[in-house]
Image (cartoon, rainbow, N blue to C red; front, top):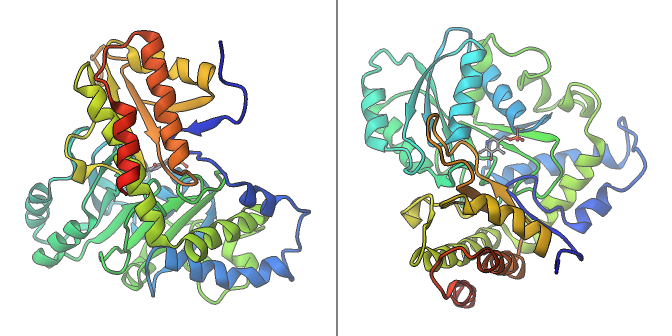
Length: 400
Ligand SMILES: *Cc1c(COP(=O)(O)O)cnc(C)c1O
């Protein structure tokens, strides 16, 4: 029997579920890009993107790009060729941003914290304290590494920089966390932050965002890596609509963005969205805690305080992760995320890792449904596991 017909649920950490309202907002003929509704919308979009970052003063540049494009946008504006960066890696995305910077001509030192633990602030402090002439121009860090589901302490990094009086820019990849978990650009002293449209923002992929502080704007004035398309000075502030995009605007995405920001900021409220994601995460963790008690199943991050509220990476040994990922779409209409970057070269554990997203336009019945589909699959596949996972997940939702 297949229970897959009916509405499918894509529970992968991006692209995420796009609300019908966002799809409907995008379903329209091409708008004028020189006058009219789209042009009139722009100041409100910038204001609300600032609200999303919890900032009063940040500028935000919008690129027709995915997260990888936003990485390069941030790098191009922060650095000149030959500048130094300190990159903090806690998974594939942290390493990836570092690799892009390196390829663009930045001298990057990578501090790698492995795949199970967050950035160790003491090690960062040691590395920056050794940089006596302040050659490091920026610290690159991933707030939530979507590969490992590790969440890093951004406010803690700001405190390290301040304690040392180190002027490096604090640059944060918030692709996986923005709109899903607490993130405060101004309070945390972030200088540069990137995001993309297809995760917590509930849009199709295609928009990359870069927020930058006044200090980052000032320090970026002499940087020589930015070409006309990526230069954030040319596309922010008091410029005509066309200049915001260095060309034709991503017309339909902007109507979708308007709808998504209204839903998130004005209807649900950002604090409530963060609380919803926290509750869904606790339900997922409760299920995994129960499963792990009686089998070769474990969440990737042991300490709940360092786990993302938007995605959970887990190991199901003996290839069970892959078998379950094959079972749930075929029998229950749910697609789970593949594990990425979890198998070190030389290790033979392919098929042991998966990720479940609880990110964006997701509510309790969707997450509980995905967990129940997983329980059904584990049972059908005869995977050894502890019992009570669904009761525990439901109790977590009931207690929220
Ligand atoms: C998804 C993701 C990216 C990459 O975004 P793309 O849009 O796939 O290029 C980068 N960083 C993090 C933390 C992500 O989750």
